[in-house]
Amino acid sequence: MKRKTKDYSPGYLKNESLEPPRPSEKEKPKMTTLTKTFEQKEMLAFSQLRTLTQKDLISSFENNNKIGIVIKDQLRVAMLDMAVYENLVEQAAELERLTEVLEEQEFFMRTQHRLDGKFEELPEGTSLRNWADLR
Image (cartoon, rainbow, N blue to C red; front, side):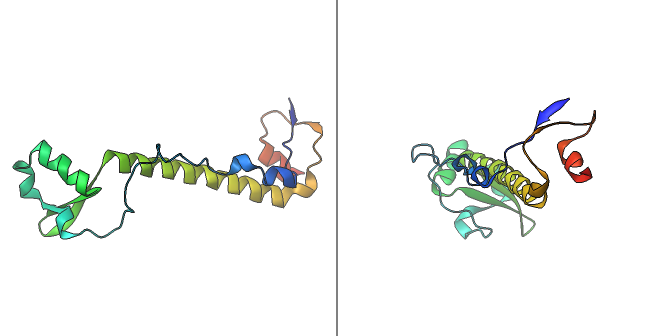
């Protein structure tokens, strides 16, 4: 199997496309920064859930982006507004992607002296990373 090694020249490392895309103001959900602490107005006793209406719950999320549920005098459960949850999931995925890019860049820095950018025959079933370590 023939593979061309990636061009890991310094120009590749400075490539603008590696920066995360900046969402426009319309795409950003309007929210405040999440904190670990809950204010009194953001907490509900578990027993209040039985009498809480959907309308009251939705209005609570309009005022606060999180609600803590208190069970046996301990804050045990947190509920998030869906926009906040989606934003957290997107941020976690972006963090994972950026971590992979950083790992690739660190790998390049360790192995750049061995890469010459030519086509080379890789042994069958060998990954590029294992092949680079063997050279």
